[in-house]
Image (cartoon, rainbow, N blue to C red; front, side):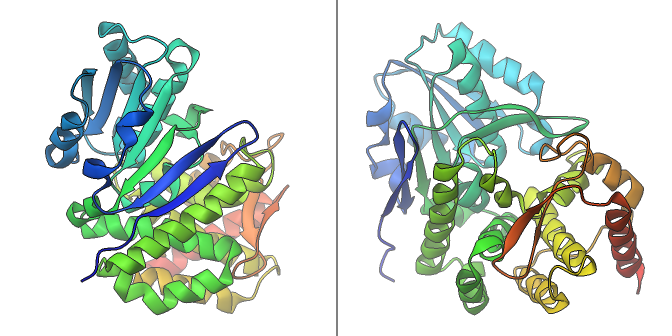
Amino acid sequence: MKPDPIRRLDVELDTRRYPIRIGPGLLDHDDWPGLIRGRHVLVISDGNVAPHYLERVLERLAGYSVAIFVVPPGEAEKTLTRFSEALAELARMGASRDATVLALGGGVVGDLSGFVAACWMRGIAFIQLPTTLLAMVDSSVGGKTAVDLPQGKNLVGAFHQPAAVIADTATLATLPARELSAGLAEVVKYGALGDAEFFTWLEAHAEALLAREPAAIGTAIERSCQHKAAIVARDETEQGERALLNLGHSFGHALETADAYGGLLHGEAVAIGMVLAAQLSSRMGMAPARDAERLAALLQRMNLPTTLPPDADPAQLLALMRLDKKNLSGRLRLILWHGLGRACIVPDVDEAIVLACLEQARDEAARP
């Protein structure tokens, strides 16, 4: 099979730009070490990724002063405690303002690494080396960095753009099937929120994506990154349009928080959240129910959940949604849609309608 070509695009901001490179073999052959300005490098990874790829990255860092910080895998590790420990590593190595943090892993590692870089000496460089599909198509791009609190996801963080995103698609070979599907939820999101044609393409290529066919995977990553890069360029700090990228996330983050970050993967929670957002849109008379059914059908083909967990508590989920970062002045502000490819920001959503939607979803999930 002919290898997939290297795909290149840029995130263009008002004052700077940075590259996204997508393709196989980039950890070993791309010139990303040339983006490191000083001599100090902190590599942050996790216990699943480091055994596969850490030594290869360290080989590219010969001649630098390198420290390594490896956290256990999982969203439960994206905490202020791990953040503090990573900062202590930078202090221990005497890292200066021209130091660089390398994020080698998935979304948890990327979010943690970026927040560490944002805060050390008021901001140093970091490079994203994503190894999961979800990180490649979403969390590594755009400069959102954060850690979680028990009260909610990503409540402590900063906007801090990476120096580059180097997505070595060969790393997806070691990605568990469940993690691959979780990443595909974020890919589907881009079609659902603003590109009905891409959504139709995903319907036609679902099996190829699940089979990790290089051309299909490369196209899905590239098109997802193009969508995100364009929106981030227009609204870097989420004052308006960028909020559309959170389709399904208000519900999804509540599900993750209710489960203490220990059950659903982020992409799985987002899949359920997108279906709930589509169903709520239908309940409010904004969108046809058939589009919600079409969305659920594609997500199910991607081996993703689309119904509430059986023990979900609608009242608890609604309470957690009140702490969502998109809300304004204590009122629910949700990302809903007018149908496939037409997401919208809806302020002042009536909590009673949201609760009714959650209760109906719970009752339907409980049916045999």
